[in-house]
Length: 426
Image (cartoon, one colour):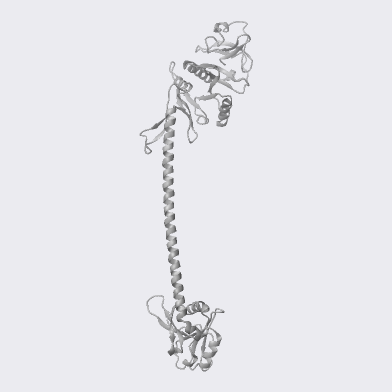
C-alpha cells in the first residue's frame, strides 16, 4: 500500500494531504464508483482506503510482486508518513513517493525548498541494504543536487557510512517517535588536552531531529575514522579544535623526538670523531715509535743484512714462534753483536732473555746451550754451522717466504727440525 495515486484528470494524489495535493477532497475518491486510480510505480489499478488506525492510503486490488509500493511493510508505511508529517510540521513542503524525471530514484519523502526544488530525501530503509548500495544510492541523489537522510529501526551495516538516523517506534499510543542513534554532541570539558573528549549520543524526538536537520541546525559530520553522524556546527568546531590541539601536540612531540634524535646523532658523531682522532693519534704515535725503533735498529740491519721493510713480518714470525709477547733489546757485543730478544709472559711482570738475532759466528764458542739463535735466511744458518763449537738451537724465520724451520746444529753436524726451539718458559 502507498500514499500516492494517479488520477486521469487531477494528476498526482497524496493521501497524507488534506486536499490530496491537487485541491480535491478525500471524499471524492474514497468509496466513489467509477473513479479510475493507478499506482505511480507499476501503473496498476488502486483504490482509496482508510485503515483501522484512521490512516488514509491507496491499495492494489491485485498485489503485483514487482511493485515496491504494493509490498512495503506496515512499519515502512507508518515511518514514511511520520517523516512527511515531521517535515511539514517544521514548515517545509514535503511529498510522499516522489520520483525523479529520469526515474533513477524514488524518494519515500521529498522535501522541497522555498523555490519548489527538491532539497532533501527522507528514506525509510527497513529492508536489507549493503554499505556499498547505501553509498551508491546516496551518490545518485547527490548527482541531482539532493541531500538524503536514511532512517532505520534496527542496527544495520550501512548506518555509520551514510547520513542516517536509527529511530524507535512509539511504545504506546500518543508517544512520539524518537531517535536512538545517528545524532550526537561532542563532549570536551575542560578544554585541555588531558581532558577526555568524545561523541555522546543525542536522542531527541524524530520531529525535533528532522526540524534541526532541515533548518540547518544539524549537519553531517564525518569523523577521522569514517563514522558519519548528525551534529550541530558548534560541536563540529569543537571536535575540529580538539583534533587541531592533538595534531599540534603530536607535531610538537615529533619535533622534540626529532631534536632528541639529532642531538643523539650529534653526540654519536662527536664520539666517533673523538675515536677517530684518538685512533689517528695512536697511529701517529705508533708510526713515530716505529720510525724511532727502525732508526735504533739501523746498525743491526746493516750487521744482519736485512731490509727494514721486512722487519714487521720477521717480528710477527718471532712472536708466533715463541708463543709470547716479545721485546727487542740492544745489540749485544757479548753475543756477537746480535740483537737480544726478550719474552714476556701473558700474565705477571718481567721479561726473560729467550733468543739472539743474527749473532756473529765467532761468538759461538761459549754460547749458552739454552739460548735460541734466530736468523732470517739459510746463508746465516750456513755461517753458524761453520762457527759452531757446541750444540746450538737455530730458528730460521724467512720473512720473504714466511716459512719457519727449527734446527739443532753443532760439531757433529746434527741437523733436523726441532719444534721446541724456545726453551724459556711460555
